[in-house]
Image (cartoon, rainbow, N blue to C red; front, side, top):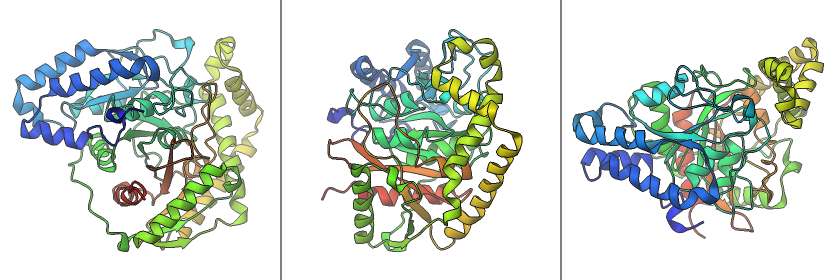
Length: 436
């Protein structure tokens, strides 16, 4: 990755917003800088399903021509990307499938409508895996084009990491935000399940599907959160290391981590301990060891019903992995599904008790560095449990593996406490991103 496209050197959304407010730049200049990066990097990264630069220029010029409008929305003049799982009234939405090639929705998804109301300059649609499952598109990792960017929010993560846009919408049903953020070296927030409206977002598993977004800083994540909720934005408060209490949880899935992932996690623990943060070792009870498998059961059962039309009428156009998932879901009984949901409900109570004395849990975000090859998107094993439990999660960049690839750390927070979690993420990032 070139220094100019490293997300650490690219301008954040909050900085762009400040510069626009000071009149030290223009919306058109911000847009042209973003498009310059797209021209330079898109031939290799291939983050975009489609881009509409002419309308984006018109919107930027309109904003510059009416300076009072710059105060009309938190994201006014800021370039944003939207995952091609979300309906857009002015652009086709294919959901990562040939079945819906050229499909033109009649209206925006609720999240897209909120972005427009907040003044965001939506550049286009980013590539997603097929129906947000595992079959990848053509996107490559901006740090190494021979490696996967992760999925399913592949294009959104890559567009932010490559410096094309400071903010991008994504979604998560298993690990579709946290894993690509870890692989691409950016921040991502998966909020508490059910907080954000999924109307107009193609569903896979309603009990798990969660709107989220990727960004260059924790403050950018907070800016997007406030814009989507139509709330005032204030910068995150500083959290001195001495005031942070973090639970260290290696999880039942620890053996699934690669050696580089385990080494990075231990390095993160060492650094946070040395910074003055209070670290408390945690263990999930043995009876919660089935939760990752329960997430798979819930996802399969619900996906078979969400995509019943596609399986019935377009089975030949579905990838083999997706057909297998849907057939697995059809084979599950309602009793098996309800039992998995019951275990998840108990798991939420256990997690709440486990976190009673800490601000958040530190857990792995991904098994390790992004794997070589573009025929798969990596393993979401370290996000499955937290997605099932519906807890807010942040992927925090800063560490590197033996091949120079990013390895993120995941913070799991308390329900509906996203702002506090993001403030902690900002403090953790300072520690992880400080050169030794």
